[in-house]
Image (spheres, rainbow, N blue to C red):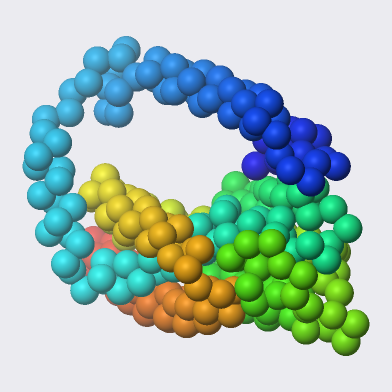
Length: 294
C-alpha cells in the first residue's frame, strides 16, 4: 500500500487526464508483482504438511459444510455484522474515497491526491498493525475490545471530517461543489489525515478480528476464517456496486450505522469469550489444587 501508491503518485502527478500509456505501465507493473507473488505462494508447502507432503484428511466439501454450520451459530452471526462492516469500509477506502478526492476539482491537483491518499492509508495500516498486531502482546493487556472501540472512535471522527471536507456529489463524477468549511474550499491535509485514519481504524478492526477468530475458534479456524472472508468480500462487492449511485452523505451514513453495530457485536462476542476463559481458568486452577491436596 505504500510502495505501490508511491509508484502511482509518481506516474499520475500533474496529469489532468490519465493517459492510456500511463494506465498500461501501472497495470503491467502491478500484474507482474501479482504474478510473482502467486508463484511464490505456489512454492509454499501445504498446511499441516511435513517436507511439503500434505497429511490433511478433510476434503474441501467437508470443510465447506463446516463453514455453513458454523455460519448459523449465534456468535458467528453476531461477528458477521463486524465482518460486513470491515468489507464496506474496505470498499470505501480502497475505491470510493480515492475517487472522491480525484473528482473534487477544488483541490489544487486532485489526481496527485489519489497516490498520496493511498500512501497515507498504508502508513495508518502499518502503524496500527505493528502496534496492535505484531507487538500487541507487549502493548495491550486489557483485551481486544478496547482496540476495536479505539477503531470505532477513529472512524467516527474520520467520517465526520470527510463529511465536512468533501462535496456530497464527489463519488458521482467531477464536481466543483463546496465543502462545509466557511470558504467552501476542501483542505488537502484534512483529506490526507482522513486517509491515515481510515487505514489506522481498519487495522484496529482487522487485527482484533483475526485474534478473536484464532482464539475462540482455534480448533475450527479454517471454517471460521472462510466465513469471515466470505462475508467481508460479499459486503465489499455490495459497496462497490452501489458506490456510483449514491452521494457521499449516504455512504457515510451507512458506514456510521454499521460501524456502531459491528463494534457492539464484536464486543458482545469478546465479552462472552472472556467469561468462558475466566471460568475455564478457574476450573483448571481448582483441578490443580485438588491434585495437590490428594
